[in-house]
Amino acid sequence: MREMGVAREAARAAARVLMEHFRGDLMVRHKDANRTYDLVSEADLASERALVEVLRDSCPEHAILSEESHHAEASSEHLWIVDPLDGTNNYLHGIPHFAVSIAYYRHGEPTCGVIYNPAREDWYESTRGEGAFHNGQPARVAEHTALDKALVGVGFYYDRGAMMEATLAAIRDLFRHHIHGLRRMGTASLDLAQVGTGLFGGFFEYELSAWDFAAGRLFVEEAGGKITDCLGQPLPLARSSLLASNGTLHADLLKIVRQHYESLHSA
Image (cartoon, rainbow, N blue to C red; front, side, top):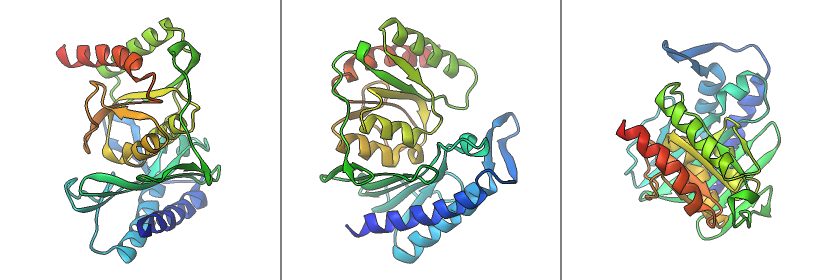
């Protein structure tokens, strides 16, 4: 489809900027003076400009929703939801685990998406009804039927208080169910890609924005997995909790993550 070609072109444009700056000197600022670990760099902003230029040239009538500077309504008929640098902390520390995430939504439904890690030359692509692909090869979720067979991914929001404690409590309970291990990689779009490629049996985070999961959501679903919020409800196109899985593990994971999510909001 035409939009997939546009998404690839935009991802390449953003990635060129990111790789020009990677492991170089960068101007960095704090988004919030009280959260010195919540960072944005000149690379974020420059890559967003490059990405948006492609979208504007190719689809001038479409709306854009992004983290840094474009705030279209989620209800827009034609909507691009983009993160020009997912994994900013990894990027700034020289860790080659970050991504450009681009999704095209029509009438509020995901139609196609691209997640691209230029440091690894890893492409994760999905189109509604046509499957998910990793570097051109079909992707499929893991076949695990029990938590004691699975590796689980987790993300932390910038909150270092009650939300962090709830996340740690959920991690504790996951280990009590004898999961093989837990990974906190710091790039939600790639975490969702790991679910879709079968490396993780599941992934959860108690707060994410739409640009963090817009492309990854479709990748998981097209790879045969399931994705909801942490109450088991359909994932909204807004800031939300998130649970992704291979499908068969979803109910077991949900029992654990929901309990601590509910306690967080009832406190």
